[in-house]
Image (cartoon, rainbow, N blue to C red; front, top):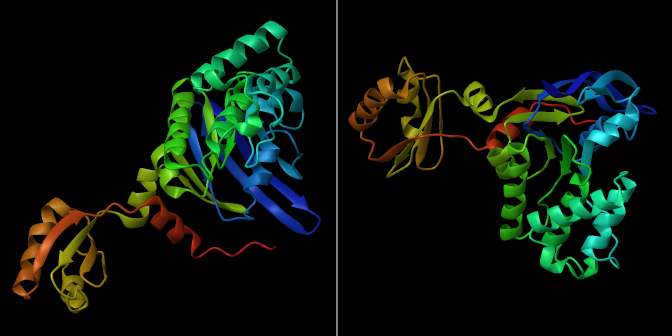
Length: 311
């Protein structure tokens, strides 16, 4: 079952097309990473999927509900963390959660139960009576996520959930996101932290007004870079490019100052001949290792040929 489905979803503001013909299917219990530069239309997409603004055209369904004809139902099954979560600084953590729980339509008993559950889960119970204005950014972020979960949504939208957090707090939030997915929730994550997306996401969408690519991180690596090995040399690598490129099994080769990045179909079969060729040519090989490109490398590769959207 897909938690989110979009077909040609589009949003236009006067002459500016913020989101164009978005086709997207996200299975339930998936962490989906939505990646793109500032101004790409990511926030507009989230606002449409949360039934906060209407599409200009196209369709979208979240947890089975149409975002236009069943907007109230969509809002009931979604939770959202914005980049600047709105909490009341003069209220305590518990008072904040109780207030928002009642806005979600929970009874007083349900609100108290849910607030206590999430305060304990996020290790905020001992600070439950302290004003939120005294909280660190990490504590506020966890409280804001708790607020988004009070009504037990099946789909959770998180916008830059670890932005500005120290490493320990960021790790805590990432562990929490994994726990949410393990509990059956679908997570729609927008982030500029590509290492974080690489760690968390089952599925990656690269977006710039239009969807550029949609796949798993592993499939993106295989499609863009295939099987590659990194050969580190004791001296300059550039002189060895022509002879490596002439090898019949080499798909591509690039050089850094002291390393060769060689793309080839079957490293186990072809590495020995690659090494013999380099040694025979006088190369001093320090070591050879598989090359696994980072998600940042993949993202930049995908983005470099796209057209910058209108401002």
